[in-house]
Length: 175
Image (cartoon, rainbow, N blue to C red):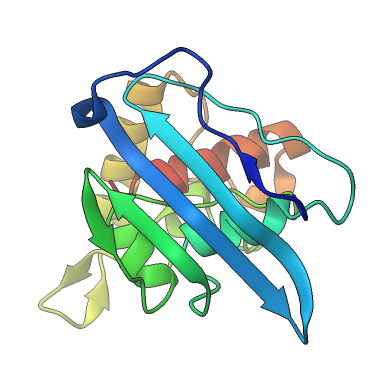
């Protein structure tokens, strides 16, 4: 993505009201080296995209901008047609954007439910972690997603594919 490029879909002028996430004229440099130059991206409701390219092409840089990891860049990111300027990952998550990293970000010693709600624990009287409520909520989420995992299972005992499903459930639990 070092050259000017557009990652917008190729199917003509669509109704922009369906656009849930867009990036226009995104450029980002690191120490004078351009990682992205004038990149565009548009995601419409119901679409699935694959972001592919050679190592160093800027894929991770674009995803980190869209998810609030990188905040210093040129261009505009919009969510549901409204320009946003995320101060960090939490802002992006609040807007419904989450990344599922290739490297898993789970605590192996904790349960599936504890990992899904880590940092957003359900509390009793604002003080004590309500593990039963977390387990019920995680179970309902997993069921809704069609994921057959025990919310009380220790994540470290799961297969890698199952751990990836926990990461996906965690990301979707934020919306």
